[in-house]
Length: 317
Image 1: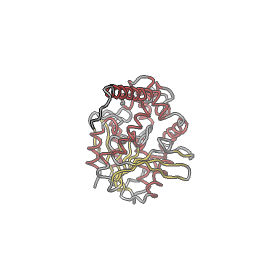
Image 2 (image 1 turned 180 degrees about the horizontal axis):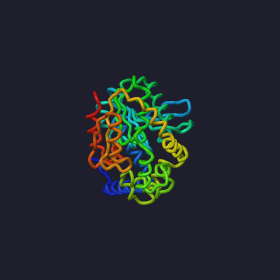
Image 3 (image 1 turned 90 degrees about the horizontal axis):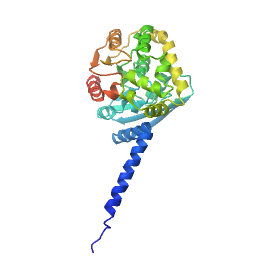
């Protein structure tokens, strides 16, 4: 017996789809950061990544893990979190490595009641490495994450087999470098530059890191500020002030050379830490310097294909 559908059904179905797409568009416009997060989580889940947590004595560390093979630990920079920073390259890296991408404390899904400091960040990642029994770790740190990665490599030479520093000046950064950065950005201090309190401050930060978000409408910038910074400003400012105020102590800890292979990767158009700083760091570490043409400070985000290719070349099997 033939089955007949009402002739109006396709029209109703088309209208329903159109309304659903319109609603999705409106939600995306009103909550762009949350929408981006959902799409990123879905994409990483499809690539085999799963969200994990590690309980700490004074908090919790959130991280994504996926892939198989030798461990590769990715440490993100100041702002955002692990997936937002490394998401564009994580599926490609998981084809060869067992990738772990944590959210640093006071970023993303990680939290702590400890005093905000670089050493507290390193403590949390050391706990992750030890708790998971990781050895032969390839460690990659970008921007602020490079400072944390250097500290981890100094502490755990028996567990970390290779270090890659990306867009991070480490122990060669001085007061004159900071003065020039603040002059370029127009910010009065490092913590006011990297922890925006208003949408205009987000635009300023996005401009100096080379992100097209610098030209986004004000409501988008405010959404970014609220999503990634609101409620965490005090801890983030404390982190940045501690890094600036403790720069000499940090440099002193690295008076002894690292006893493991190191590679430095830099964007040729990095306006946060210009290329000459990367050249200084490479000389200090006796490491090769790989430059990504046209790359700004956000290499894993804005130069993802080139960054993935370089990482696949330099990470040792």
